[in-house]
Amino acid sequence: SHGDHRLAMALAVAGLIAQGETIVEDAACIADSFPGFVEVMRALGAEMEIE
Image (tube, rainbow, N blue to C red):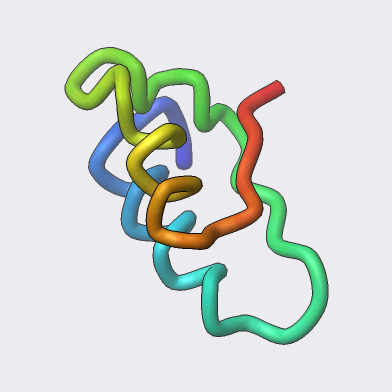
């Protein structure tokens, strides 16, 4: 994501329909604009975590 929170969120959403596991590097930057992103995605049924 090169540290871009918008790109990281877009890639995470795109990963929902990808086959296999999707890893978005530098995704911690999502917290800059949407701290609850992972929780919202989990509430919608996504299996997601930020390391």
